[in-house]
Amino acid sequence: MTHLKNTIASNEPGLSIRNDGGAERTPKEPLAPDFGAMDDRSVRAWTEAMSVAPLGDGRYSVEGQSDETYVVDLPESGCTCPDHTIRGERCKHLRRVVIEVNRGRVAPPGRVRGICEACGREAFLPEGGPPLCDTCRLDPGDFATDRETGDTVVVARVTGVRADEVTVGSRGRTVADYPTNEGYPSDDLVVEVVYPFSRSGVSFADLPRYSFPFSRLARREESLVGPFDRY
Ligand SMILES: [Zn+2]
Ligand SMILES: [Zn+2]
Image (cartoon, rainbow, N blue to C red; front, side):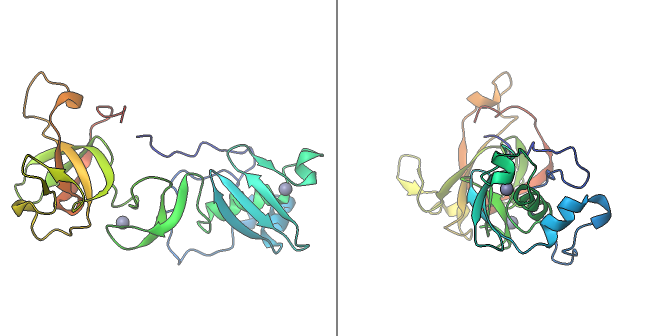
């Protein structure tokens, strides 16, 4: 599993893409950017009437005053408008998308606006990943505590399937049916974990995996870097 990191940056102050996914932004933050940090073209790009809509894969459609619609490709720093394609300018459409992403108004590349399955809050969720916000999500290598036993486990993988859809063991019971998982939502996503200290001399990737409903696990602050990088 790759961590979503935006690596786009520009040389202009106030126009680099922040790396936090924009998910934690509060509505209290003023919507007007710091004009002092922007050059004239960026100020115009922000104040002109344009509507920006994410298309996925880091692409955005930008519709301006004259009804023309252009497509900005943020990872490529490209735009389909003549200002960019012919004159090679860092055009107002590209600038506008950068500002909107930085302000948390549209999803950054690799994210989509949605509702977090665990906390029910609106957030920018990973595109094609489990529908969990940055606060709730578990990543491979994260330590977690099993709320039932207090055991320490390490997350191997967060699956995209629900606890009542995954069968485990020989009796064909689902994760949700397990007596110890009673009381946890049956539509929880299934998380695969290992017991990191169960066998010495066995690498993490080779330890047996166990399936848990998401909310049975409490994330801890520590995490292991590396053991599940290949998943
Ligand atoms: Zn443009
Ligand atoms: Zn959440």
